[in-house]
Amino acid sequence: MSRSRSVAMAIALGVGLLPGLSQANEFKPQIEALLDSGVRPWLSDPVLIDAIKAQNADHADITQSEIDALDQQWRAEADAGSGPLLDSVMDNDLSAFLVEKKQGLDGTASEIFVMDDVGLNVGQSDITSDYWQGDEAKWQQTYQAGPDATFIDDVEFDDSAEAFLSQASITIVDPETGAPIGAITIGLNVEKLF
Image 1 (spheres, rainbow, N blue to C red):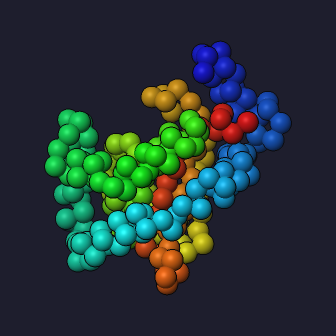
Image 2: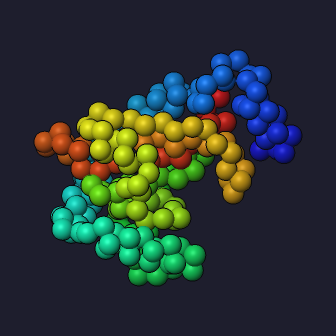
């Protein structure tokens, strides 16, 4: 995106110059349509469901102090670009699946990551800055809100992506029971939704 287009978009979002951009995220209808057509159809794929269930079983008795330690380990490994925890997630089957799904969204998605029932990442298309999402709205307003929950966050300018992004999150349910088992977040470039 050109610098002038970025500036024009920022001004339009900030002062409501574009029609229909008076609220924090006027792209919700387009985002919901994309979620319905491009994401929800694969949320019951066995690769995704099995990975979440396995991690939920592994973390059945995890404590908050253990979660905090894993998150600190992840942050250090993310800064270094490698490490046993980061590599175990980035090299798993679910992460490969999410990379493929991100590519299938033709540049609309900046990242996709899946969280377990305590908010820890299970798989992801790109390295996230933290491993634990349980203290954030993306997990709290989906997994904790129940099986039909969707949370679409505000649009923000991402300096590293040089784009206006919104994160959309959905509760993931066990297709056999209908019970929530985790959540997914997709970072979306709203400019690609026009």
